[in-house]
Amino acid sequence: MAREKGYARPAGERVYSPAREDNWDLRWPQSIRIYSKMAREDSQTKSVLLAVTQPITRTPWRLEANGADPEVVRKIAEDLNLPVKGEELSAPIAKNPRKVSWSHHLKRALRWQLIYGHAYFELVWDDASETEDGLTHLRKIAPRHPDTIMKIDVAEDGGLEAITQKHIGGRQKPAKIPVQDLLVYRADDDHDDWIGESMLRAAYKHWRLKDEFLRLEQIVLDRNGMGVAVMKTRSEPSSQERSDAERVVSEVRTGDSGGVVIDMDESFSIEGVKGQLASPRQAIAYHDAQIARTALAHALNLDGGGGSYALAEVQMDLFFQALNDRAQEIADTANQYLVRKMVYNLTGDEHGPFPVIAFDRIEARRSLSANDLATLKNAGLIFADPATDSHIRRIYELPPALPPEKWEEARSQASVTPAVLTDVIRRLQAADATPELSRQIIHALLPTLQGTGPRGHPQRGGANEEPEVLGQVAG
Image 1 (cartoon, rainbow, N blue to C red):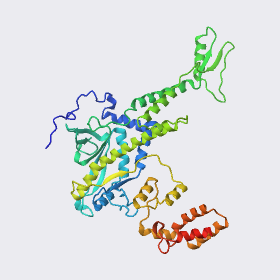
Image 2: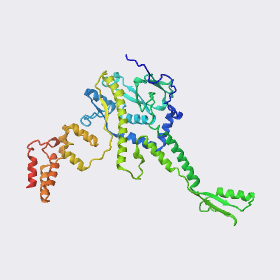
Image 3: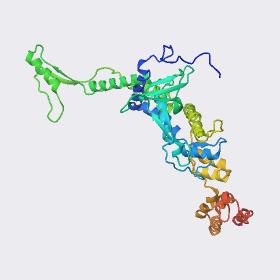
Image 4: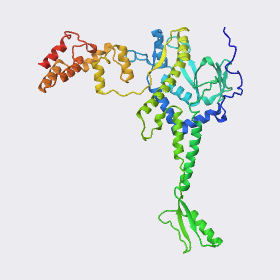
């Protein structure tokens, strides 16, 4: 067996490293409280997290066969509640009694990875003797919250060995979970400590300063928003007169019956700030923008002040690339340490090929208009080969295509009869429609004419039908 001569990190207790986090508040596990507070309380931080997580969780995810046994692919898809590519409608995923949902797992894993730098889950398996088909299925991907983890055991080669959870509730001792029962996502783990680095790390100082400026702004508004009561007395007031003046300025209030009574040689006024008062608003806006930059989410900084469309497009392209990279990290980890384990527990196969979890690329998309759909249809793209048809429908978020056996049933409910087509021709002739317009309308109606087969191909005597129809229009 091959052995390493060096090491990735010293085993056992952590030792000093010049590259280690030098902010004690952000060292694990103290960092869990800080990052949780940032994600929970700050509006800009929450917006950044949503900007990163929503596109990834909303893009379609699916299971691809990748050359694996179709029956194995089917069982994996059912256990993960994921559709199989190309079978979204023809063979819908059957429900099972287990508690695994890839969409719910993805949201939790992605959010924890972004906020804390790591996300730990325990894989729970069914006993094969108790399942409906006698196979070992994945029962649950159980989350292990970062604030419950008290120790992470890492080997010298940088590999994870186990984690230990705190003693909580009725447990007699801490729970130790070995690596073979874990599914772990980590972000930017340059130190191989399996803690990773939070996406919020670079935003921390901006969050702290912004929080201080917000408190300062509240003080500025409170002290200077309504002015300060000022009262002048005669040149040498008695102690009683001074005491009365202090009581007046401290107790003066507005209202229907509010007012102040003074002598001829006294004066009273409400005075505001004189000169230029510095506002922390600009500094707050700057730190908000820097927080968004940590995730390349520059679009969150747009405030209607104008700018270059070309620059905005470049910035969004960078943002989409970052989103695709994060989604691919999730998919790679799940394929390596989840799907392969599922296949092995189901079949005992260690060599593959294995099915893979995949997703549609995240990018800027626009909705298809009626003209776009007509163009795609007339060009044969929507009703082309099944693979192309499925791809276009998925990219533009169109419903899956009907299976061939259901095509005739659907066509019978939305088809054009010969009588209707004859009436359309008569109306076109009466309206003196141009040949080009008539041709476009007839082209659109012919695929739905009763007597044609799936995808608009004639069934009986239809090969010469279009020229005859167009001849009627010309006549």
